[in-house]
Image (cartoon, rainbow, N blue to C red; front, side):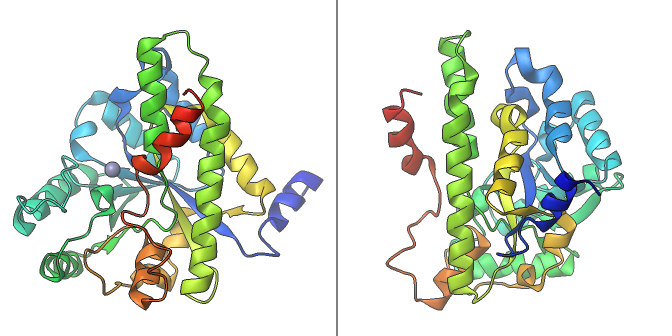
Length: 295
Ligand SMILES: [Zn+2]
């Protein structure tokens, strides 16, 4: 053990801050051409340990998608289910049965990969707007051996990524590193906030799962994010270690159901209504900042 690995081993020892990295959607087609070929290797190279990849079936039902899933699975990462078509459960026009059929279609595609685990992540973290729709899904998941692949640290990396890609469309030579600091600050801030909320709502620290996406901005700056998390005393842990914690078995009794698990557990206590806004995270909270920065 050299000094560097010794120090990294100590990270999180004092505060117990632990976080696993999770990536949603696998929308590889959205990564602009110049970066598309290298993005997958860049993401995987920046991962310090086991991550979880929550797969939208229709995005990977092709040769490139299969190659991505093979690479992540072979590297020991977890593949989870994120529906076939990413249609959200919040819409009353999709019945529980239709929603479940989409999960099973994605399950069919994923089940041949060694890394596949029956962890399901709801698109937009929306788990049912009513008690009836929430419980229909909870019961179905129990019956089908699925667990909720909860996010505990919610964030809007997807919006920073969307703004970056819009900018590149208008201005192909735009300096992408201008997004680096705002992106890092946003994720680090959200990590700190949800950790603080967990300690207040649950009464102790929990192993976190950070919501990120398989996109351009993470392929550019994930290595920097990992380094800065460690500087801020976070220990980056394996996704399997996080999901094994009993807190991920909780089913908060709230409706609408969803958001980050920490948000939902805080909501359930009834003690944080002055603090919690709905939705927990969204583009509307980030737009003024990025506008102000001219990004
Ligand atoms: Zn998603």
